[in-house]
Image 1: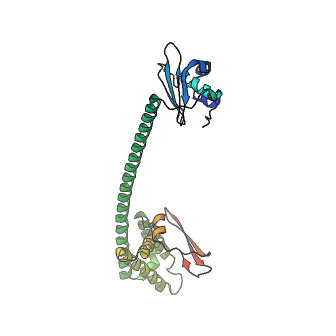
Image 2: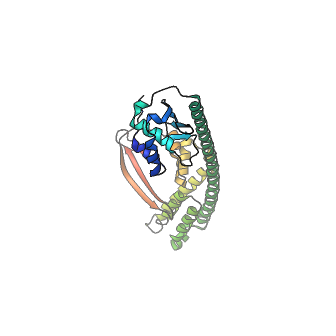
Image 3: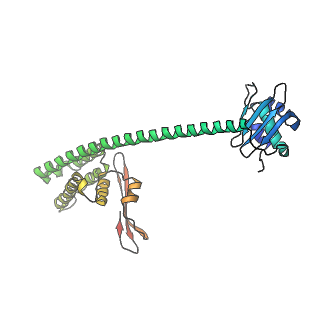
Length: 292
């Protein structure tokens, strides 16, 4: 296996320019009592008053030297790397010495332990995140339920006193209820209630139209109270109308899939205090199916 290493790579590892100069003086075979390489490592024993054992992991160029220098990598590590880069034929391929095998084994074990620790921390964080997300969803469900109960009482009072009072108070009373629903995080339904304010005095039949829309809302509230009894696709639709966002994963797993060439035939853009919602109505060119 050809060792691909450049002098630029080696110089980039050096702690300072002085170390580069000293290391290049050691980049000759004569300075090395033992030298060799494998697919995993480069190693050698640098001659001197004391011979120093040098080891380099070729996967990331991390190194170890038995010398006492505080600079890392030291001149011995840089020297063997310069030698391998400039005169690769001077570094024969050999079996890894036991010293090198043990060092690489310790490095691999340490890396595996770090990976396990990171994975455990990530799993723990995901668990905490899921628990926090579940708590937030539970609190929101409580707020939505309280908001819908208040809206139900308001609808009953409105029907009890009669729609004639709406002429004097519209659209203010509808806007007030819509804001309460936004505060309760039921922004989708808030849009329905806000649009009720456009009906009074909009034509001679406005009481009938308003009563019809109030009936739709009352039916929606009843459906939400009995959500668990509804089919899965209808549950998604009711929750979406109320203002719950449906996770992409749930749409892909539970939603109906139909291939067609879809055309947009209507769009609606509504704005609440904290949310802008765009709805697009589609019709399949080939099947005639409709979708929202």
